[in-house]
Length: 158
Image (cartoon, rainbow, N blue to C red; front, side, top):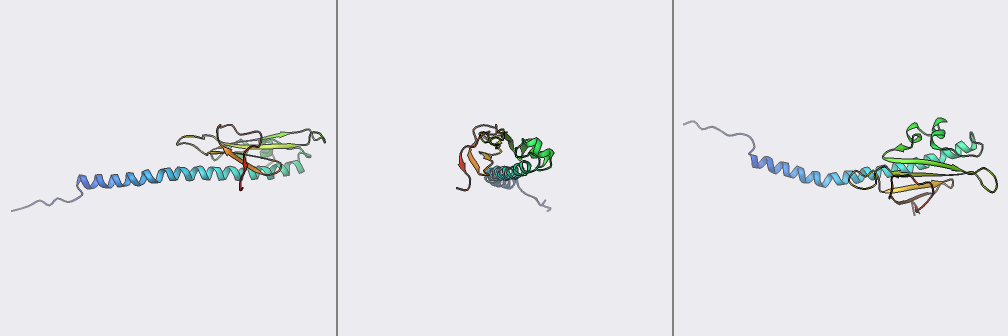
């Protein structure tokens, strides 16, 4: 009498493995997205620090005391062209110079960074950042994808 041997996995065993992989993915994906948002925020903070140094260099050398917008700073090679275009790592950036250089209206600037998507699963960040010539970086909860042109919020690190 010849019997045929059945080899391989049954359908039930394969379904159990697929279910376990699905559960692991359901736990891991939200953590991955949160890590990506945190990395984007860290990049935005570092970029604002870079712009602060670039603005100081620009004012001391090329600008004769005046500050400049991001494209002008990028043209001088003080920041990279990606940041100079106003978008990097899921954040939009702006630098707003002001003042006339007089005692009544001294040179000044404000930089801002806002997540390009601030809500939902595709959010690139949850906080908006701003800074000025003092070098202090402020953070507030993002409510818009438009970078701020004035400092607001709580200084980070406090």
